[in-house]
Amino acid sequence: MQVNTKNISPVENPPGIYRRTLTWNDELMLCHFDMKKGAKIPLHNHRASQNGYVISGKIRFLTENEPFTVRPGDAYNFGSNEKHGAEILEDSIVVETFSPSRPEYERPLG
Image (cartoon, rainbow, N blue to C red; front, side, top):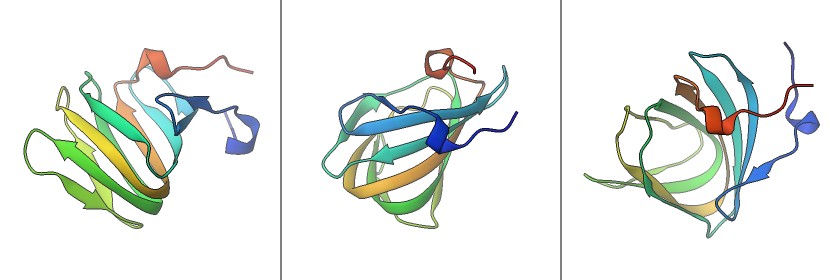
């Protein structure tokens, strides 16, 4: 399967966070996020491990331990059920993978 972000309508959730689910199967999911300055992702957790790579912008991640800030070229990981959230400090674009896939992020195919 081949997809392009231009052909996928974004889903906004929470406000200011736009997700495009690119590809997935039961084991792995790839998503593109466009995050607007000032948006916030509340502290949460999920079964899937999460890996991310920052293409542009600046994000402050909140955890139960030390918060940390990521910039272009940085990568990050949250383990299964690890609590995390974020404050978007600049308009940002990130690519994230989830393993296993998050069924709530699936989109209609076609």
